[in-house]
Length: 296
Image (cartoon, rainbow, N blue to C red; front, side, top):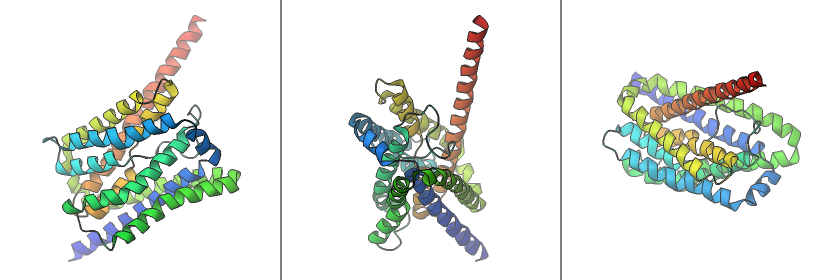
């Protein structure tokens, strides 16, 4: 009985921290985008269409194909399905406004993808009900919670950015940092009670997640269009699946399984691969620059 009480307590803390993480990160995204950014993005409907196809058609299809493979563990397969369907993820390696060298379409594109993922998440929760826990409360309650943690913070941040641009830029960075801290707490409370389930995911589950990340990168790159910047942007935004919403649905729909641990493992793998890529890229650029200066 004590063990069940401890599990329930940590489950509630993890769920609360995840809800706060999603809402805070969505607010940060809204604060980093201006109405002018969205209007500029709207003038490139082709980029929006390709981003939607990559994130909500191709990657979900890839996720279904990976999850259906017999060698993929069940916990990893369910996590991959959630992550594949829910795009609009955020960059844990970037805090605040758009970074140097990033196309100006980046923040508004993430805004649009996150908004669409928020609208899809109640549908994903209802579809997962036959294999997961029953929906607690009414469907309207589920929709209300989803609205509170995704579309409402996005729109509120956008409106605040319009009213007070300077304050919004500072607040966006602060909210991004707070969101990362909330995610760390949610991850720690999840691992406290479900760490043994990592073994069930195993190397095969991790390999399946790497395949999903690689496939998402290729899909984004190929659909990026003729511009090299757009290809890189779409590859990056397609790789970054919506870990927050996926973790939230995993905690609610599969409370007794290790699906939430698998989602956290995906986040760790994705960040690690991007760190390696950034390190290799920066080393290559500096080496080329040094070689060029020596030739001069």
